[in-house]
Length: 117
Image (tube, rainbow, N blue to C red; front, side, top):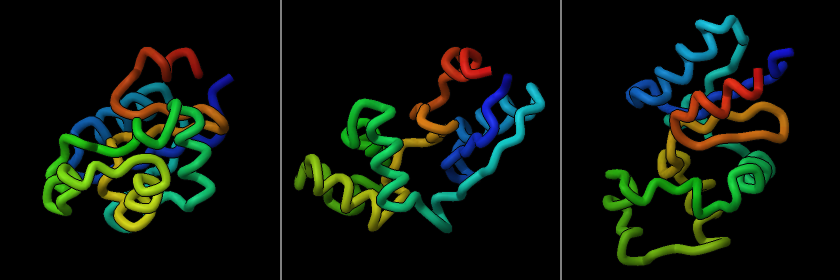
């Protein structure tokens, strides 16, 4: 049975986010898209996602333009500072983040999503 509440956190410009949307659309799984340019996850959602992907460090996009623009490359935030940075600026998140209940993934990983179906 397909997951009931699939959420895809990403941006319209992100090609992997569009591929994730297409993956679920092709399999007729309903999903909700959350545009990180408009709204980020709440603190509770962020913690649940971080627990599912083995830590908040796996959520921050250290290679992204936004990370460099904010000077975080040299500040090298860890732990609670990363969580606060992600809450303050959701565009620092790696995308797409796909969440279904207690499960979550970061990046384009159709092999994992297939096991959810």
